[in-house]
Structures are given as structure tokens and as C-alpha cells.
Length: 183
Image (cartoon, rainbow, N blue to C red; front, side, top):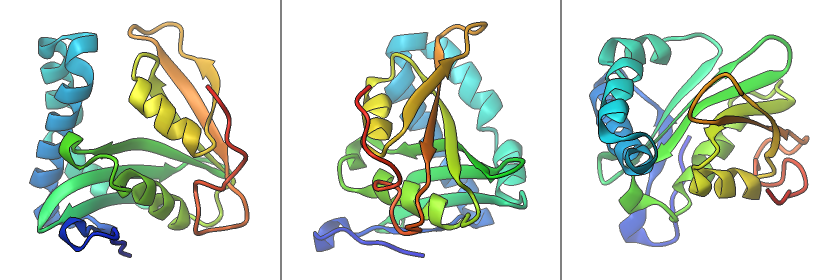
């Protein structure tokens, strides 16, 4: 599955990741996590988290999971975006990750990663995720796509929020999955 932006210099392709992509995805996750979370959590905590959550063996296991989409967005041969979504019991798709390199944001890559992830799991009626309450860029992005805050995970710090989007019958658009909601 692929998508490209309007500007030929900024074309990107979205596809399932291969074993050759795992190291590139890890580098992308480390870079985006430091950009997003260093000021919120501190460099040391972000480094510890990415070393644990984004270790090569962890990512390799996730990429091989059944009923999951481990996607990479590539641009000029470089990994510039990544999404990981897993079917849960019933009709729920858990969007565990969606990250785009800071230098490549606002080009439609995140929009398309979300659309492709949802489209690859046609039986799912809801998409759920968890986002840090102070991650204003992510909250705005998901809000534009119809996600609503459904709760808070109170026992943890920082303050993660649960969000959910209802999927409509249109398999091609996550943006139009339900009416937009203001956060």
C-alpha cells in the first residue's frame, strides 16, 4: 500500500516493514521520542524507555505478530514514519505507535499512516490509543481525526490519556471515521 504527497520531492510510500527496516524504525523512534518527550520526561528517562520499548528484539517480535500492522513510511529510501497497530479482542484496534520524524511532519505522512493502519483491519469498529496528556501535538493530531478522550490512567506519571475513535463504513478514511471533536 502506498501513498504519495503532491510535491514530487516529498513523495512517501507506506508499506509493511521488512526485517531490513527494523533498525531504521528503531532510529526513527529514538529520534522522535527524544524530540517529543525530553522536555516532558527528561533525556535520561527517555533514553531508558526507548532502550527498553524500542529494542531491536522487541520491534522484531512486534513486526511478526499476527493480526497486527507494523508499518513504515519511507521517503527517498529513508524511514520517516512508523505505525504499529494490533487487533484486540472483539472489534478494537489498538494503535500502539504512530510517529513521524520531526523534519517530515505536516506532510500528510501521519494522516496516511493512520488511514492505512485502519484500512488493514476492516473488521475493527473502534481504534484506541494512549497519549501523554502534555503531548499537545499528538492530542491535536488525534483530535483532528475524530479521537475523543475517554479516560485517564491515573496510577501512572506522566499522565497518560486514553483516546478512542469510532470507525465508519468508509475503509479509506480515518479522518472521516466520526465527527471531529475538540479536545
